Amino acid sequence: MACLPFLFALSFAEMEALMTLTRRNLIAMTLAAAALPAGAMAKARTPIPVILYTDIGGDVDDTWALLTLLRHPQLDLKLVVTETGNALYRCRLTAKLLALAGRDDVPVAGTGDKGDGTGPQSAWVGDFSADTYRGGVSFDGVTAMIDAVHSSPEPVTIIALGPVTALADALRRTPAMAKNARFLGMEGSVRIGYGGAPKPEVEYNVKTDPAALATVFAAGWTCTITPLDTCGLMVLDGADMQAIVASSDPFARACIANSQAWLPNAPWMPKDFDLTKKSSTLFDVVAVMMALDESDLVMETLRLSVRPDGMTVIDPAGRKVRVATAWKNLPRFKSKVVAALTAKPA
Ligand SMILES: [Ca+2]
Image 1 (cartoon, rainbow, N blue to C red):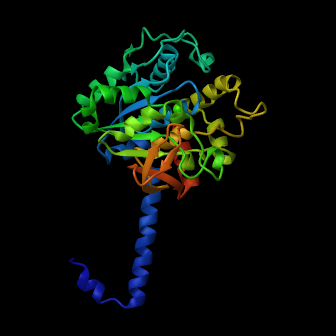
Image 2: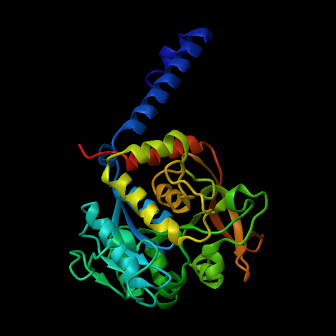
Image 3: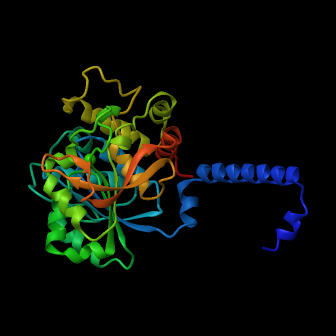
């Protein structure tokens, strides 16, 4: 308020000039902040406790998402829980990525069938053993998740990157966990389908277990999603992809190496798909980044219901969900992801 007499003394033109200068300063400050390494940004914020809940090892985007998360220390990763069975393989992959990132303190827990330890990214996982992983690998992810939420002094953000069967099990077993957590998921399709298709369609994570997402939506916590409307458009190409391909950063190298291991085992991908020019769709990276930064997205609060066929529909009888329905600035979002994955440690 002390500046008011000074402002009243200014002419309209002078006021306008001052506001232009202030806008420029704000833009400069924003750009400077965006250019800061993740570590420097972390000092400005209190870390957010996070559980990553993922079907990593099926599509490769979960791998990109985990590595993106690990480049943001403002997200304090407490636990990774794998979903949709084949738990030994998914846990070995997760543990190897965490070890690569120097985060082998993070426990990893599988759910569903243990499987034989192999899957689409096995060529990258190699002979990495879950037995010697320092943070520990276990196979009761439901209990691990409940315990991690209950023991956290701060509310936990559960970032869900796959079908939510085990998360729904956890909620049914311990409904009170919703009081100390929020849900942030890559789930559904509201107005746009895969690859920007002009109509919504059934999305894989929801289709796999629609009742589970209905249970998650029925819980007493905040629900936020990136549906296909936004995450389905997240593909790196052009200069963005070249920056990843050319980088010697171990995170960027791991993204490329895992994509190369995975591609021959992803029959839905085009046979001539060229990973030197374009990434696969990085759906899950959007959910991870939203835990910190929604500034590049249009957020709407919509009442949504989950239909038994897996459609997520706007419905006056549905529950309120915060939905990333469109992009404000997808190029800027992509550049943030590229910066995170190519930021060589100082
Ligand atoms: Ca996923």
